[in-house]
Length: 387
Image 1 (cartoon, rainbow, N blue to C red):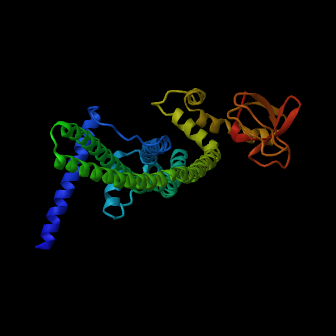
Image 2 (cartoon, rainbow, N blue to C red):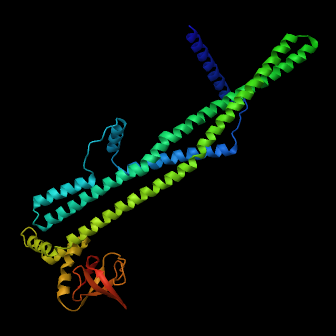
Image 3 (cartoon, rainbow, N blue to C red):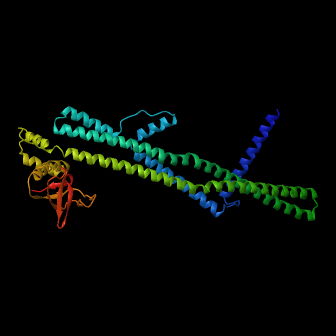
């Protein structure tokens, strides 16, 4: 019975407090009650926290889109994460493309130029897919997880204390309002007492004023204490920025590793595709002599050169073997920019024309290039021989 009485009293007290806060909040909105303003430093900290939360959410969501463009896959991963279960493993887009290329290459025949090229491209795409998985995993651990921890952990704590501060502020202003009304009522009672003595009425309002003053002191103390707690939490936002900066550096490093791997994979693939141009030429000659393709081999090469620069580069590469076997020099057009790795190499700019020639003992993937008084080794995969 005593416990029930206590619960009823507590419920009544909570209801009274809630009603008092609601009345104070409404009167403030209507401009009928004064409002205790927070100090400028605390307001700035609150604004900084809100701004941090807003942009952290946007960056986190867009990073998730970048790493996993498929919205259905993101929803599936979210559901499995909430269920604390591991999502089923599926091929990503590069891996799926790579598998299709390998299957097609085996169907066309690994001994054919096109089939062989498809298999090599497929293997490279699967390696890119593996690198993509590593990027997603590393970014999730080192970048997304800290951002999510801030949103779901630190900022929730800040929001809770901020809401509590708002309630303490409403309690303080409601107490101030009651004190103000009690003082007005006491003054009126004192004026009435001059013409009609009512000492009991005056004493009642005096007691009400004393009670209201004590309530203001208590609520002011609670408000100041909560303001200090909230301020200490908000000052931790600077540490959060420093932590997120380190996470951002980790994310950039993960991206740098990923793109460097992809570049190296494609560079190796380009060299592999350039290593069998003679077979490709013979295949084109066969197809050009077929009745359906009533076109000569030179015209096929000309159209391929116009529409497929990378393939034409492989075709022209066959001329490099002739250049290496004969003395003399040829003009060559640079296909891509190239930065010399050391003093023995020559830096190149795309679309410039240089003179190239071979010297005995030189590696099969390199030629000597000359541009005016400058000369040095140049990679043949960056060149297109001119007639």
